[in-house]
Amino acid sequence: MSAPVLSIIILAVMFLLATVLPLNMGALAFVGAFLLGSVVLGMSTSDILANFPGGLFLTIVGVTYLFAIAQNNGTIDLLVRGAVRMVGSKVALIPWVMFAITAVITAVGALSPAAVAIIAPIALSFAAKHRINPLMMGMMVIHGAQAGGFSPIAVYGVTVNGIIAKTDLAASPMAIFLASFVFNLAIAVVLFIVLGGSKLLSTKTGRLVEQAAESRMAVSVGTRAAGATLQGSGSDISPSGVAGKGTSSSSSASPSAADAAGARATIPQLVTIAGLIALAVISLGFKVDVGFVSITIAMILALVSPAAQKGAVNKISWSTVLLICGMLTFVGVLEEAGTIKFVSDGVAHLGMPLLAALLICYIGAVVSAFASSTAILAALIPLAVPFLSTGEIGAVGVIAALAVAATIVDVSPFSTNGALVLANAPEDVDKDKFYKQILAYSGIVVIAGPAIAWLVMVLPGWM
Image (cartoon, rainbow, N blue to C red; front, side, top):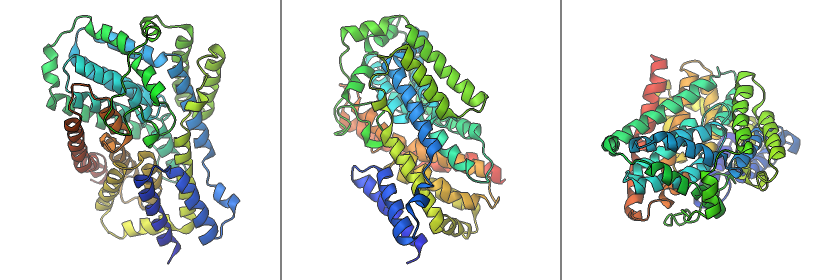
């Protein structure tokens, strides 16, 4: 058996094990890299570790550490409360506020499941109070998280752009970010219209929205206490009830938390907001390494408010760090085995670049509905690079379509985001019915999403 074929079998086994069993895909990838590299290819340990993505490691650690401090000092709750107050009496704007807040949170570096874990309990409590369709509200939160997920300083964006930077392909970080943002925004508009958003336009609430916001801000505190921290991706982020997918993770607000929710911004919170703005300006405007900038700002915040950084290191996304670093190390060994060239040549020999691009998008969508989106992106993009290098089809369009196809399916109840929404369903909602609604919607997304992404992002570049 040739090394490329054997490596593909190892990769398939890794995905199968990570899907069926609660195993970290990154840990499996390190084992796969070691066995394939040392046993099959005769690589030395140093040669295998040469593929370890040190820069990406620093970026993820720095960004999630910064975001953990922002959580601890209440900055995220402050931003949510301020945004909801802007709604006033317009109930129809509440779903859009939740979409926008989640998008901002992921755009500045939070993991998608972490953002959903924070916002979903708040959003779904609003849905119950104001008779908003819970499916619409939950999916708006998830699509908001995915809309911001490919910003140049977000985990998805850093992963994809880091892979492309090592190739000869033309890089366009903003194009990929905007493609994901606009695509998810368009889906949100459709959801809003189809699931009764137009009926909310005539609904008024007076100060109920603001009062509800101030009384429910502590939900995120309770959720974090129940386990919804930044500690990883996949099933690792699970408030109480996610594992069983049948128990709400909402918790009652403690008096102190409620008081904190209604208080004015503190100096550490203002400094945190300034730090997040500085992160975007320095890293994007001046092209300074995101990892070093984010961890520098995080340490400044730790000095300003030592209490807020307590436990923040434990909230660093170590599970995702292991996942991404393991996968990219394994991908490096795949290159040594000739697997990437083998697969790309097979796709190229189809003789139909458009069909090949569509096939890649569907593979990413179907697998990602059950497995880690980050792992899928880390595995499929390198496999597509040689095929895209031929210039027969626009590389930016294909990568953007693959990025969208592999992440919009996170609405699936089998993914962390979908499970979080299901777990936080309002008490008066039939959980079985809600599960079937989410499942049906995710089925539509898996079937139609890749095709639409291909039509919008790949086909125009070919024509």
